[in-house]
Image (cartoon, rainbow over all chains, first blue to last red):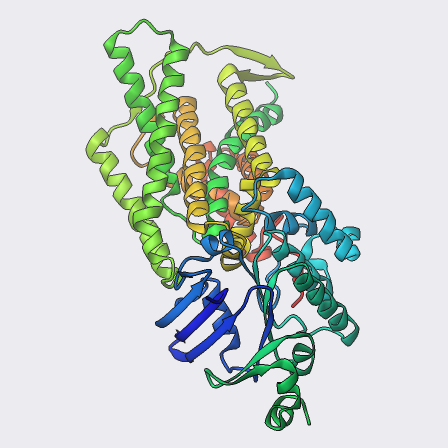
Amino acid sequence: MSFLEIRNMQVAYGGIQAVKGVDLRVESGELVSLIGANGAGKTTTLKSLCGLLAPSQGEIIYQGENINAKPSYELVRRGISLVPEGRGIFGRLTVEENIKIGAYIRQDKTGIQADMQRTYDLFPRLFERRHQQAGTLSGGEQQMLAIGRALMSRPRLLLLDEPSMGLAPMLVKKIFETIKRIVEEGVTLLLVEQNAKLALEISQRAYVMESGKIVLSDSASALLKNPSVQHAYLGG
Amino acid sequence: MDILTQQLINGLVLGSVYALVALGYTMVYGVLELINFAHGEVAMVGAMICLAVIGGLVESGVGLNGISIVLLGLAAAVLVCMVLGFVIERIAYRPLRRAPRLAALITAIGVSIVLQNVAMLIWGKQYISFPPLLPVVRYELGGAVVTNFQIFIFLLSCALMAGLFLLVKKTHLGRAMRATAQAQDVAGLMGINVNTIISITFVIAAALAAVAGVMVSAYYGLAHYYMGFLLGLKAFTAAVLGGIGNIAGAMLGGLLLGVIESLGAGYIGPLTGGFLGSNYQDVFAFFVLILVLIARPSGLLGERVVERA
């Protein structure tokens, strides 16, 4: 059985059938990406996985259990964490408060302290700015904060929605290096990206989504060489 | 007697009560962006419950001293209002969470009317007097008089405000409340049960309102089924003055409004040559509200940090 398996999921969002039947699986420890154009339904898919949207049909099986339409506050406790599109940091909380609130579900004080230190090691800029209001951070710093905060819940499955969006190339590189490191530490990761080339380069497998449906799935290396993928998403 | 000192003292005492009620408006606005117009009525219910318990205890002739009786009445008021706050949110506002803002606002006014009328049916239309269980002690202070009641009200309000401030700023729960106020969806992603946080917010707000209602009725020696209306409106003004949604703002706005009102009432007679008297006290609150809405709608502390995309 797969770690995460989506079967024929359909989601309506704002009166529109945004996801029209998605089948997707992620194995434990994998980095899988979901690529596709703007409006293809990628974000809707992720939102359904973490309880922000309820699918109208289909099943989401996570660790052998149907989690369809469970509230997000419960899914975090089962190890699913989302870094939302646009980062969703709490702008009027300090950087440190944002990080602490990432560990909201945990009670182990020493573990939380250690993980905070780890987050600061991963992103020294956040340590420098820990007492600042998070809303005053730059876009790149906010993305680091959003990822650091999501890791504080010790997720087993991390969902990342467009981590490269609006960031300078140097920062994108840094974020993607961090993503690789997170997977190496044993977190299973599902990445949604418009920057298909970057996503495929670090993923093991990938799905291509178009108009609410999965149209292609293969190993990332095969998709990188696929002429239609190259043409549509890699500028080739 | 020094009018300025006297009115400053009166204003701070009254203002500390406004601040307690204003906190409820601002906290609920913070998490739901709803002006809970029933909030003043919760304070009224607090006063009524307290008086009912006091009356019962006095009649039953139990051998308790005055302070114990009043404290029992206060405790009962707080408990009943906490339940009331929880129930109001649950049955009146939660079903409208996704409805247009106006629907919830009208419902709030509806809840307020219901509470007033239920109170009128239970306790009648007449003023109910607060029994003289506690001896009034007067102290001289810089040419003015301050009573033990005033000192107690001011100190208890300040203690409650300080407690609330620490709760919101320093604790796990407070962080969750602030996160919920900023982005409910993201708060859920952190594992915060947003519904629970909203319920807790209503319960805390109602507890503060209950204390305020009891203090007002003890201070003026009277309670009335309609008392929540004016108290609520003034506290709302205080919350807007400080910047709605801002906790420190509600405290500042409450104290400031109390002082403005008292000074206004104290000086309006001499300034108008006796044409207008201190019975125009209530006008000042609304004058302040209008001025704030024109000049600085975000309130004194209502400035928000720029959030970059």
